[in-house]
Image 1 (cartoon, rainbow, N blue to C red):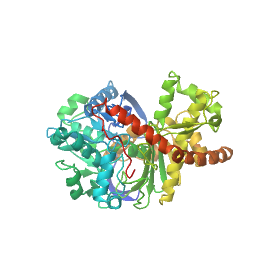
Image 2: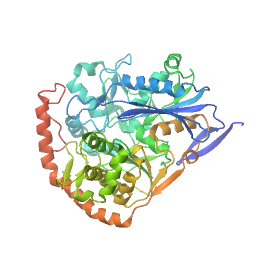
Image 3: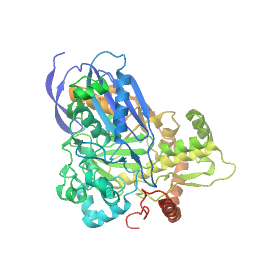
Image 4: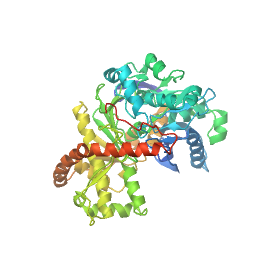
Length: 532
């Protein structure tokens, strides 16, 4: 097939693309919270040729801390790549990468990590720095310039935390990485970051101008060389000879810039048009609404999209699948199918149980790192199926809360596409549709971020259509009778947090202060919510 130059419109932005056959499979690897996943994909139609997974724990050295060694990301990437390429002849046409974020991985001048990477909003250590920087720069001014107020999701306060608590470590720090950009550096030698990840790096990035904001970067992260910015699907560089020897890839293979995993999840299901909402079922729950213009809402995150010209309004719950996994461990680790069957039998309302899913604080729209999980209505008659059902319903109520906040902020939620491991088994997605009253599309492939990274890689070297790669497989249509029942329970859900917040905060602070005496890395002041 002869290649030809053409102008194609992608989600409102015009790009110049080389259309034609792609020679070889494409590789996508995602570094997630609980595992790293890789896929090898046929670019002609999106068929998954091979998959590989590496599971890993999150280090929690003190209350509110969540960390991971960046060297582990590269180790797992090389292992995944070797497994995917084993016994499969033929070249890899391009490599796509993504990862959890925004994270803070600091390195010295030789690109050696100076400490473990601080993870995204699940790490709540920097609440004092959030309050201080917000007071210094002005909360409203930060919102206007950066698109989001400072929260546990923000990068700047975590860099400030390192400066205040590990001054010797901070003194050696020269560069800032996230999982995707770390892989790009290891593969190509390029030091880059994508615009979307940068837009979650408040207060370092001006989301209106779409560039680093020097005055605040110099103030909050002095001495850090911020990376040049690219779009997630742009080619950042090519595999070096050294990286080729470590991975089995061919030297010279193009590697895209990549981005945060939730955004490649959205790419993987084609949720990139105005009115689309990507709902990611995973260890945490993430929601991304593509909006027509830049919207500013303090309780949500306004970000740059994965493609030039796109804007998003996003939300994230601190736990979702993490709660069901915690329950499963408490129950002796029975199979998921067994627990889902018992939860299904429990029925709407979980036999009188109501849960707040704030087991690691909450991100949006509550924005309270001191919030905690609550299970109301317990009796000795309740079963593990009831508890499991209550957890699924709690995350569904959280989704409804976020969707309501998005609509109140001006977001347009017209089409919901579900993705992630939690879409398997039907029950969870059915509960979410019943609770929200909204239909969901379930695509053929729900692998998520690694698949989206592979699609971006394919698009960087040829023509690819996500509609052809990943068509809709089935739909979840809400049951009106169940929705009416959940409408009543949702009101109670919304009442439960303010009714218990003071108690949760008191218990959280007491626990944090107690552990501070035995955990040397803990902040002796404990986490504090800005303004409390």
